[in-house]
Length: 234
Image (cartoon, rainbow, N blue to C red):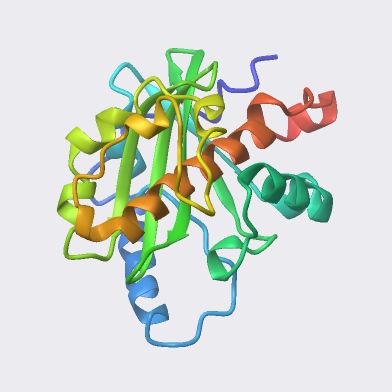
């Protein structure tokens, strides 16, 4: 059985005026509407335009598959405690509830899986930040992308020059970054803040990256192999 063959979204095959495009517009409208009323549910983090974004972030890709999961689904309170311990900080707020949905994009070249893209929401100084990491099969960062940031200095932090500083880093590197103090050693210490006046958002981006890498380690890299029944569900 080839579990991926029926579920891979082929890049570049979406027609103009497709259901997916209309759905994206509808979801964008609902997000704007939701901003004017109290939010009650957990907030996930998805690529705005997966076809376009996957092709840009993973140029060698020809398709992708989405997997939806959560800390609640994968391990509940025990997993939450593990993630918080590894992060060195508590989860708090709407972006970090135990039932927050996470979208993992499995990336393919032909029928071969070549990596992942995963994003998380993070509270910044003036609003939410959406931070995506692009990973190979070993968990090394191939790319870094801030999709959203509410700040007058967002342009500097979203600049590809800033993102290139993360290429080649791993979770082991971010183990040397202390969330509480903002201090780091090794390769993470070498990451330069392009907007010193936006220190809070810079530190938020680093926290989001460490959180992202920990979640991917728990969800994917260190996760036990799926049972045959679970594999069939995919």
